[in-house]
Length: 312
Image (cartoon, rainbow, N blue to C red; front, top):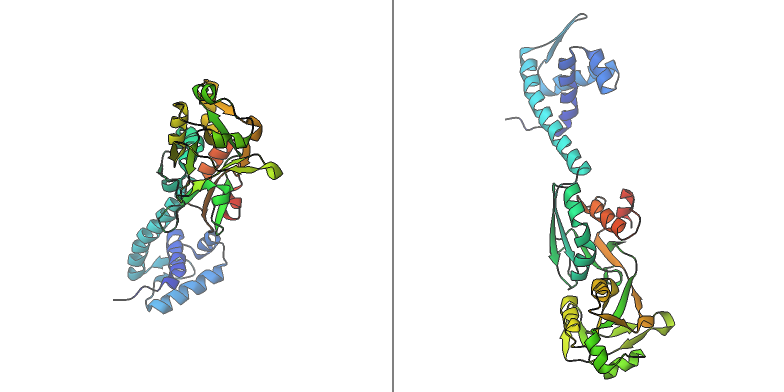
């Protein structure tokens, strides 16, 4: 059995083109080379295989029996290669497949949820496999294509792309709580009031950051409960258990409905935006660029050029 030499593939393609065109000059035009180059490649192929493939005269060019059989087999094989390349082009030009994404709970609710209907409608061949996790995970080791965290939590060896504008953090409370304890006039007043403590993904208690720049202060609040995710903290705040610290965007509806009110509004703090990150590589996963564009557009940001995703 003869072992296939992949370097022969180009010469075999030349041979099939000659047979299909029944002319060396026409084959040369199709392949964009000279007739002499075509003739040279054919002679080289016959010498390598040790079999005459074409009977040629000044007037005709006819495959030998062996050449005819080889051309028939090659047409099938080359068509399979062509089909595979077309499928690859479709995969590149029309996103399809599964995109595995690890995201913060707040990010999933605030920036992924709103664009999901559009994403699914525009890219029906994509499946978004979304894992909600407030812990900082190794997305490569755990098989994720990308992760979404706050901008200051993105690993330095990853490419990061902002998905939102800088985020506003506020203190909120239910009207029943402020009627009972009054409104804090300064951040320090919160130290004497019931607050919902926060625990981050790495299990550390998180001090509330109020104000910006030189005026920023950290308040190590205390209260009846400690929550490790936003939903718990907001539910507790709605029940009047304590003051809560959260993203303004997350409680916008509750504030509009009068269920919560923002206190210490002048001390709202600006934090890093939601940021998507992925390994530095030449080609990004199918569907990721489209997801980023939809989110950024929904958040009032400009779309990114495709080339910028490899160096953002």
